[in-house]
Length: 375
Image 1 (cartoon, rainbow, N blue to C red):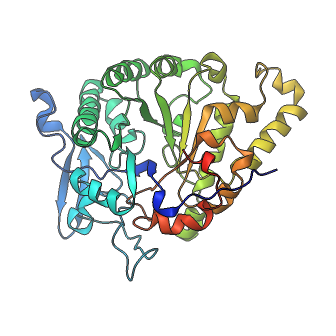
Image 2 (spheres, helix red, strand yellow):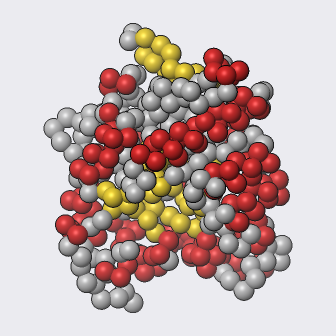
C-alpha cells in the first residue's frame, strides 16, 4: 500500500542532476601534458564547410558536440533539432564554458550536477583505442583529462559539481592506480562501460576487473555506467528511423542490470555501488520481479550464484542507483523500489533533457511524491 502523500511545493524543489554532459573546449589540454606528448594531444580539426571534430593520434571522435541540442529549439520547450552540431558556434556556451553552465543550471533550478564526457565517449573508449597502441601517451591524456575535469571544471564551482573521473580502461592495473590518484583529489565517481565486453575487453563477470572493483570499494567510488558506453545501442534494422532507437534508449541498460546482479564480483566486493545512468526507472519494478522469479525457479543454476541471504531484488535495491529524466510511471511506482537509490538527471544539453523547464514539467507527477521520499 502506498503511503499517504504530502506534496512539496514546486518552488521549493532543489534539483541535483546525476547525469549531464560536457562538450569539451578545444583548449582543455593546453599546458596539461608532458612536453614530449604536447604535439600529440587530442585536438579539434576541420573547417566551416565540413565541420569540426576531435582527433587523437589517428582516432576520431564520433561527433564534435554529441547531441548538444539545448537551446536550438523552435518556439519553446520540447522542440529541439536533433541534427548534430558541427561547430562550437552552433551550441550554447553553457555546454563548454563552466561559468555559462552554472547560469544554465540556475535557469533550470539545478543546484548540483555530475558531468559525463563527450568526445572521449562515455567511458573513455576513444582514449582506449590509442591506449592499446601507446599506453603511456593515452594514460597521460586520461590523467590530463581528469585533472582538467576535477580542477578546472568542477573546481571552479566545487559546491555545484560532482567530479566524475575516467579510467584507462585498456589496463586494469592502470585503472586501479588512477582511481587511487583521483580519490586523493576528492573524487567519488568514475565513468565505466555498461558492457566492457562490447568494447573488446573482459566482461563484467570476469575476475580481470577485480583490482579496479577493489580500489573503487576501498575509496567509496561509485561506478557510473551510462547508456551507450558499451556495445552499440539497440537498432532493430538499418532502415528503422532514429525515433525507434531513441524510444528504446532506456532499456539498453536492462541487460547491464542483469549482468550486475548475477556477477560474482557482487559477492567479492559487498560494498561496491553502481549507478545506471540515463536508463530511467519505469522498467525497474518488472526487472526486480523477473529477477526474483528467476532466482526461485532456476534452482540448479542458482547454486553457482550464491546470494548469501538476500534476493536479487534486495541486492539491486541495496547496491544499484538509478536515475530518471521524465518518468511519471516510474515515479508513480517508487514504492516498489528503494527510493533512496533513485535519483534525478537533467541530461543537459541532450535532446531528452527538460532544460530549462524541469520544475514545471516534473511537477505534475512529483507533486504526488511524499516529502520523506525527496532528499
